[in-house]
Length: 556
Image 1 (tube, one colour):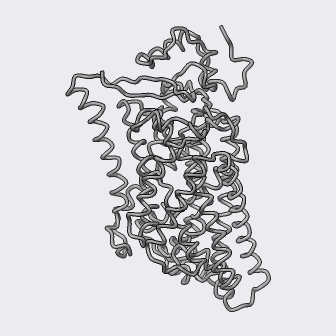
Image 2 (tube, rainbow, N blue to C red; image 1 turned 120 degrees about the vertical axis):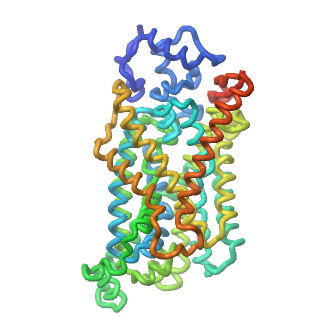
Image 3 (tube, one colour; image 1 turned 60 degrees about the vertical axis):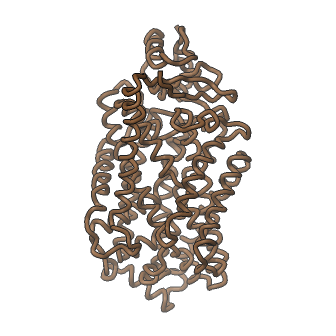
């Protein structure tokens, strides 16, 4: 019988050793309806899954086996790092601090939320890393939920598919890009048509570049990622320069005093509803540390790369976020920050370098950073939505799953494009950015809670699974506790009526309603229709011309 002894441990199945008969039995159980099932499957064949010409296996249990994309493993450590850090350090650091300071009212509470957010982000990353190293396949959270929650059958897959398709937006950074470009051009009062048109134009351009010219798209997003890191470092150093070399100007004396202890907590709002909404925005800014897990089928040495890239991105992001917030408060008075909303970075540049530079050149650099974020988010989400199509949850599954004709998941990009465009176009301009963050954040917390609870569930139910990275149990419990607190917080009455005129818990209701509708939809197509028509719901697996394996659901 073949052995695992001479194989790279990163490429071995992440299960304890099984004999050939056990593996054959497991594969047969999960592939009764597959037209490509084999009567003689060996462990060696299971290990060859990273080659798309090997026997097709779409069983949930085989998520522990590495699987290479038909596109090949082309993403290096640098490209993987840019995928993570560009996803994390996007428009949030340039836009969100102003919104948070406006909500919570004080410098001290704002900085505290960023520190708390870093701790919670580390806990969430630990959960994601244990899962990602244990189940090294593209799809990230989709794979984790399907592997963990197998009953009721297809419920987890259905709910995550609805979440990813309808709430997996690439919209908020398009909105920020549009606002900063208009600010630089002196058109910040431009109408909704121009503002939304610029945002849609960016989304369209990114979709075309990544979908039609995939290698060029990777090079562009890598370049924009390094530009973004350079911009953030430049801003941090600029704040330090102000303190060291311009300490006696009136404006610096004013801003320095707001960092003293007696003024640090002035005008703080301690309402839990306000704080939780601000925390959602902080978490959104930290989200994406595990972005590489969405594209693991294309990453070289996936398990080792995921670990090192995610931890490096965490250290980079936490340092940059805290230091740049301090730089903002060193340069811009807190009262002005409250009034600025999302345009805090532009005010920072303007106060440091004057109107000509501050209002034009550097805001354009921020817009390029937002563009880089859109590119990496679209790159990853397209792969996730391609995985959803491969599993049979989208119409025209063969078309949307294929990597032809451009060697890219063009179908996934189109599925990502449509809801993102609608989110940009439909809501009122004054509320679009905050509302997008809040709805997406609330739904994301529901998903995050399910993932964290699921990890503990697997610890008890599947101790046989090999775990190249193991999260500290208190970190998992912290993640669960914070998620529960944040999910209940929107229903606490805030001290003031929201400026957008909506009911204060609207975003929570909308986020939860998506999943409620998903449960109804799941019941209808997996239980009600088969019972009514006397059918059974079965899965067929086959391989497309480009080597992509796909699943189709059929009533029989």
